[in-house]
Image (tube, rainbow, N blue to C red; front, top):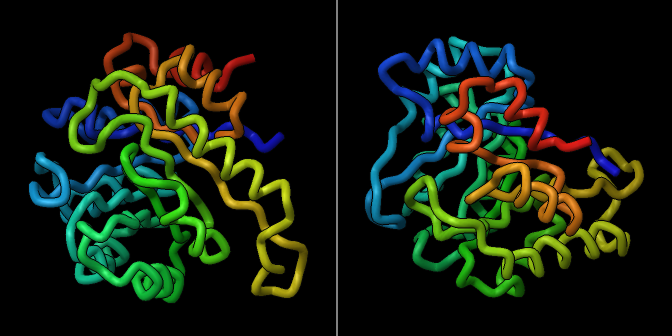
Amino acid sequence: MSKVLVAPSILAADFSRLAEEIHKVDHAGADWIHCDIMDGHFVDNISFGPAIVGFVRKQTKLPLDVHLMIEHADHYVPRFVDAGANSITVHVEPEAKHDVEKTLRQIRDAKCRVGLTLNPETDFKLIEPFLDEIDMLLVMTVHPGFGGQSFRPDQMEKVKRAAEWNQSGAREPSRAGGPAKKIDIQVDGGINPETARIAIENGANVLVAGTSIFKTDDYAKAIRDLRGP
């Protein structure tokens, strides 16, 4: 099984001391830093933009995992690339108002890892045509827009389908001509030690967690507890 990676979501951090929060999760053993970008249109909340991502980039050498919950992601991708994103995830829903295939290619051409995601209400079939074109599938386990929501176990069916696709060998050979590369399966929303176990058992290998890390006194223990034994 792939190593379980933990990506603390800074949406739950104390922004009055953001640099310190980033340093703490870095030293606590985080694998990535997750940045939730919301525009108030695609989701009913506004978070932060490229300037904050650029600030985070200066605080850590960890990979920055940027999730664009926005309309017209193609227009903004270059700004987040310039800010230091290592991985950019966009939405598949028509409401995101972009050409998904072109945006994925745009991210790839910018030398970033390519992620694609779908909301809980979105059928997995909508994402299937793009599985060969991405490095990571993000399965939202809450409706995006706000932190602190409860985990939706019904979304594990999508995680299982992605894991089955990985195992089926459906992915085309890598661009370098080597063996087919499996995609990472990321989950985000209501992730704590208990729900992390459920997600991992169903095939997830990347955990995004905000509240269950930043609202504790011991970030290192919180991260260890998410990874499990």
